[in-house]
Length: 296
Image 1 (cartoon, rainbow, N blue to C red):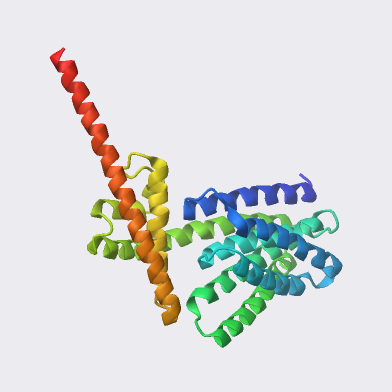
Image 2 (cartoon, one colour):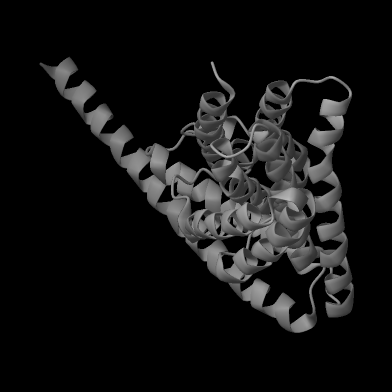
């Protein structure tokens, strides 16, 4: 397989893998405004890179950081890993035009994937963990610098004899795996937050494990409707996320998050009541049917 064809195939598979990683993390099939914006902004960055291709690590690192800032202000509030997903997709899209115009397209795509992932992660991380505006700006500048550095890594790797296609394959495989690892690393924190919700009476003990566990939450979790359970998991995990983010916010923002938490608590309680009613009704119907059969 020629390098241009390989690059296009890897790009398509990479998008599918990141979409799957996004679903694994959020249980949401809707890629939303952030992804649509990522594709549009990625194409805009591609034009800039095409004009200044000689300095693509520097231009790409800065442009993708600025693009991540734009996506952050136009998309939904997310976690740092979600920002990494969007950023890496944005970076890969920005490098696609190099497939037909550069003999080093594989290393360029790998470089932009890395730079976009770092930019998206760093910019989104700063929103929820750096409250002071000046420190946030400094953090964003540092993110741009790191994005530039990682964009040079594929070029440095080729100087040590590593083939460009292997670099691209390694980067494209690593990015979705990072998302999966991040989900498992968050598992203890999410479980602790949901156990606290259970102690307050907003969540049943039986739902804590199936809601927090990265694999068990993919199933029905004892619910009558799989889709309802997934929506329940999304809402419960959003409560856990907001409770973690609330600790690093100003009083005004923390109060807004608390209002959202109260609303989400009411929603998951109502969903639990409805599910129990459906299960009880189903059990009653089965019991009545068995009795009629025995009488006959």
